[in-house]
Length: 383
Image (cartoon, rainbow, N blue to C red; front, top):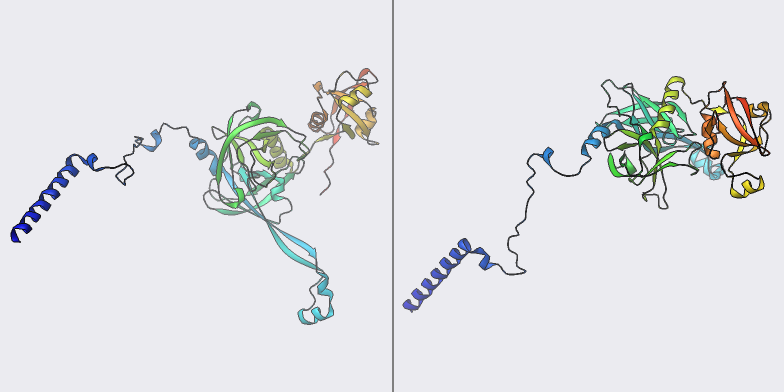
């Protein structure tokens, strides 16, 4: 028995020694397909983080993100009280609740710091009607803000904060140089989750006839823009501002790859006027205009659909005094061609009130020029 035990012990010792030798010198012999052996992976030799050879827009984001802020608004809403409050039994136990109920409505949006003096560009619909505005900076500071002025017809507004320390400021680009296919980044605070950067390209330029604003010349992009992004920055691949994110086309309420931004060329004009005077002044002549369709062109015996049809004249308006008549077709203003009704509206709005403009028209197959003393565009009625 002792001899058998000795043989067993020697056999086990030899097996263990053999297994150790194989594990050390030839470990692949012990691996089986489908086993849980060690997996060998290849790691990239990046070296320093700033030496990574990868496509990135981190520098553009680093440059622009500090100048994009979160805007929180609140507004007091008064609503008629519930008729139940008029019940004598109810009033006996709960007292007279008055004629109205008051509650506060919160809003959320984004904005862009455009000057070291604390001026912030945002959308009018972000701050419209708000009686309290708080701005949260990227570094965590929260400051009270006041509306300097707004322009509902372009959906732009300017608010201002006072900060004891230096503020980060966005760099303006030339939006007229933007091309379809350019890479862009949309920066804002979607759904209130915090600062977010999304990327895409410019899908189209000069989008109008969307029924969003009176004056439309949108940059269209597929960079994700969601609720809360309104008023945020659309920047180029160098981190320079090319537009103010304004609206999305959506059937679900979320981004579907069609977003619209107001070009910085228009935003700059509105910003300058609001800072200077507190409001935006545009030209006006008092006409009702209509698009020229192929059917209208045939009816009026016009050679093409270019221009804008004068459908009506306001009595006593600058157009009426200058002799413009319903049925006239406006072809150009100060030698700038009128391609459609929208372009006519923008050209007239760009005229200085009190100045005279040359209007080139077609009337009964004859062309004529009239000088019109431009008036000031009335403020749009409140919704």
